[in-house]
Length: 164
Length: 426
Image (cartoon, rainbow over all chains, first blue to last red; front, side):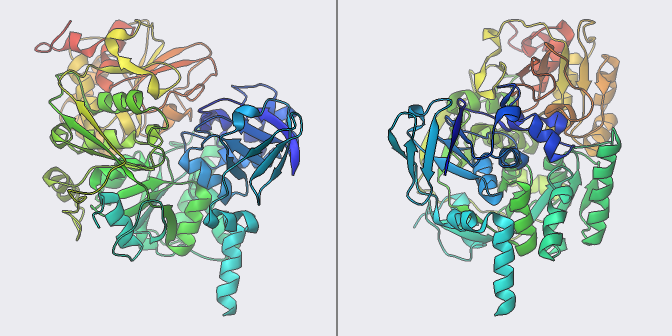
């Protein structure tokens, strides 16, 4: 999959992704405020298939899974980070948003175009021509990726159990 | 093989004798707690879609604490939906607007040492103060638990924090928790377990221990834990809970830890975290005397009974400065009742403090108490991320409730020891 890069720094928290003031409203409204305190135009400008590339500890703070859900809703295909906050990392896979860990994120800049191969963990930076790597997705989470999230995964599991 | 406290609980929940750090363990959940924000309104559609009910209504606790009391039609609908869902699932342990989940859960006797507990909120490590392995998760993860009674963990390593020495007067558990953030950083917990031990920890009562474990979330740990002892047992007995079969559970003496931090409480000063991160904590004496628009004592972290008592000790005979406002939201209705009974509430209200309902409220920018553009707040809560308590340009400092109280009297950030007669006032 290929897409444009939106680059942010370290320690992006869940309040920046999904401000508490808008938590009681619809996903659409919440998504329209995603990261507004970091970059005003992000929610308006981000396009389907784009990547969010960040530093360490992305998604720290709240357990609110909407922090991952709004990115998926806005069309973000994957977040590539040096590291993720633990709850956000689980939420991403549960909701079908890819969370990839790469030590090479410093070699990716705002606006670059990437081609990412999830199976091999290879990231081709189409803008610079460099090849980068991300860690393979853990086996138990790869099952969620293939199913499209935890809900379809459980749906398949229950269907299998019912047919035995 | 020697096991940490966390490993023992995970192994038991996974039906194994031992577990190795790093392995994926599928665990049976002893107790699941959800609240009105991440709870029914998020999990109901998933369970309905899967065509299942909760796996065991006796193992689910529901607390309405985020959108309380209803402040508009949307929040009213969320609370109504929460009540209806609780009834439909025949869940008896439902605490509707009785306080913040992390405080209500133990005060109503729901936690016992050694339990494997999940909570639909990031401050779920609070329950680790009772010797539980309790961690936070998002709503879809929780829906999986409610549908199956199970979840997975990557068995964490344990980071041991050992405290020696005695806290000075005017210094408390919250100062220790902020100090941890400065020392380890916001990802120093690395989604492992942080276990707290040593004489200073043993000397803390349960509310103090809850505050320390609560802010394991701010270290990026999966959870924080303190092995149960007689203090834990006394609290549980008083709360009407059950000690259960794991009351004496602790890690093996020769268990292996990722790292052991040794800290000493003797010289610890009151801590203040500058905007916008708890990791920007430093001694109060290093912080400029920022003028405050709002002072807030609230949240699971900073509005339990001893927090209100510490604030009252400072505020007694003083008034809140006219240049600021002091909002106080006790962590639970039971805390309010206790504070009313022992005279604490009278001191607080006489000082000019504005009492608010028990709930998550202003801490997370829900409901009343939000900050306007460019306003500055000192708060006893756990997080001061940009925009969390209101406007994007607002600035939030964090401290103990005692420091908030002293600062409310002066109108700017102030060392609480200035107001303690027998303290080491500077």
